[in-house]
Image (tube, rainbow, N blue to C red; front, side):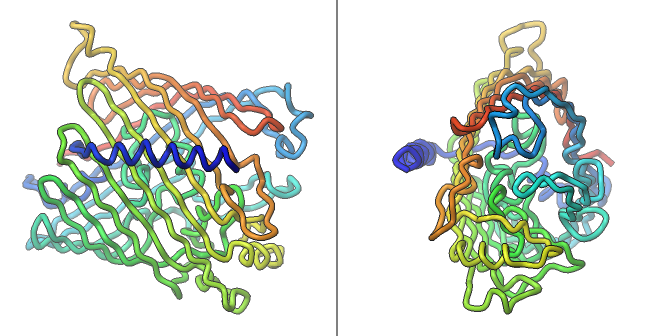
Length: 437
């Protein structure tokens, strides 16, 4: 516990110090979506998207008992996989007079978001998992009215910009082959909800505040904390309880952006079995601080997220007593979760005269993550220590032109001493951007 508190204090100190520096580099695809449909161009229609293809080799066992009986799998054979983590198509339209529309359809892992998997937290049985009702995921669909740059109202299905990765989730906006592991382990990623958003941009500031549906406590779990609570296995999203989220970014210093974001809302009543959660709030509160520095051929990104769930012991008891065919993971849930991530990369081509161009870049990078989905527990809930992890990664990002990247990465995941560490080699190719019409 003292070690955890020490890590938390150091992390908060480092990122708070970063907040004193403040940023200015924001040209990413997500923000391009916001402005592209209102920019001066030949066509009112905007098309774009992003996609990733990945090959990985994991030098550890794939057996579901590798945490419950670690000694048995210490020298296990490696295994590999191919994957399409995200393939997304964007379409936007400018109706005129400040009215615009944006939409994104996402295919995760090349499928329809239903899958058969072996459950690591239970008995190793095969389970059919539905991550979201429907055949494909509609990541965004919104109608927006722009009064001026400083004041815009967006209504519909929108991105919840809490944390670094949710706001900046294009594959060209992080060095690792997969999205940064810490945030993706405890938060919905990409997090999208239906609601209304008020946002705007000045020279040095961008702000956003939103009113959205709350999370569903029925789907919280030990491994992923509240992550799956944003989805719905039904044809609709329960919204008996609502939530609020915000984000503020500052660009005062050249090459530097610093952002703070947060979320608060109840979750217990957003279930089809509200009587089970009677007198339970399940309040989720999340705070995040992140930064990006992009200057002098160097990119540095950092983020810190801390979250708390009230009534976690009661929710755990209710979920574990649910019917076997319910969508609940039925695992102990932490009261607090946290993650920290820092990565830095340098463009090697910037030092080679005949390779140095505006777009042709080769970044060598390193990254460190610490995360724990059961950072604290409540009452009689036992901390499952295998979910406290550190990850060190390094590799290369080759960018032959804007919007295209080829990635190579080796990572070393460090678990508690009673478990086996996990090494992975990954290769990936990705693109992101808008297409001229």
